[in-house]
Image (cartoon, rainbow, N blue to C red; front, side):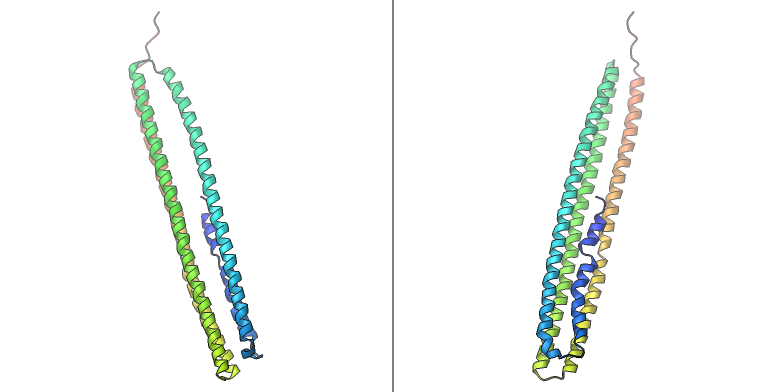
Length: 254
């Protein structure tokens, strides 16, 4: 379960998104002293190409991270199941040794009560931990879906704004608008698209607090499960010792 915060950040990191925006601004700046109208089609095609590459890289990264998360969860479940099986075997061995020491019916009953209390405490702890892990996983998936949707919306808005800006520039060129005016209007529109995208990205970055909350909530739930377990075991031990010692083992017949 560790490193989920890092995975979440990598999944929709700023670098891959910013790579989509930069070409539009650079291309617009590069048009300053050359025929803007003659180059609009080429520039628009390059942005479309960058957009396609961006989508491809983003989808590949999403699939990579999704597979990594699934793999880690599978490995985590396998390790947990193995540990629990080992703990169960050790506990059975421990109780078997205690049974050898129980001679009277009162001692046997005390041992049975103790074993039931321990088993109940373990079941409660495991159920609480399993619930915490499941809630965490569901929260992670919901957070990823929320962030994915926000990223997709932001990039779609950017693409549409860029297309609108170039379509307007093309229309102005066909209408005989002065190329310098066309260029300046295009740069203004591209800057507006960039500013909107930057604002959207800032809002998206706020979503990372979801992961921090999920991690802390899971940590607190597991801590409570462990603390409750320890308290239950201590009580079971105290009760068992009191009951077991209250019924001493009879001396062997002479």
